[in-house]
Amino acid sequence: RESQVEPTAVDVELGPEIALRHRGALDVPSRTPGAPRRRPGGVIFIVLAITPGRLSKHVLDGGGRAVVVDNGVIASALAQHLAEETGLARDSITVGVGHRTVDVTVRPGIGIPLDKADVASAAEAELQTYRLAHRVRTRVRIERPAEKEDEL
Image (cartoon, rainbow, N blue to C red; front, side, top):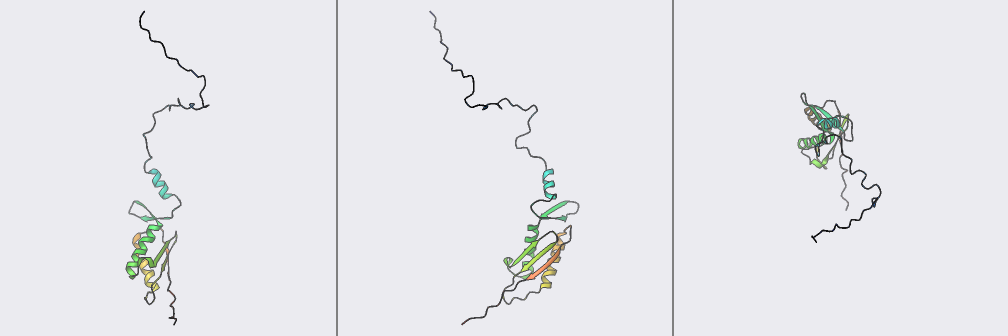
């Protein structure tokens, strides 16, 4: 008698253990899929930059280019410039930029002379260099600390 190999036993189940588990196994796209991690071009970024969104922004005159700047960037640059112009510490100047206004709050120390008109003209001159597409109004407020009397 020749050597014969006996077939192994196979357990055949008629239904899956978990219903509908493999129902998408043969879902194959009818066309060639896109490249992995494919992102649309810069069009979406331009649309997001120009359309209204969560962050306030201003458009700058960039000489034929679209330049969109967040209001926080304008506020930070203006505060830094005013700190250098006035000789005050950067943390004593607060700038808020809105759609139509720029609010500047300056807190000089006791005995430091500071003229509101000088700060306003320095702020307006700096804003002119940014070439904002829409004109903004500048408001300056000087907050002086109350002088405390020495108590004995």
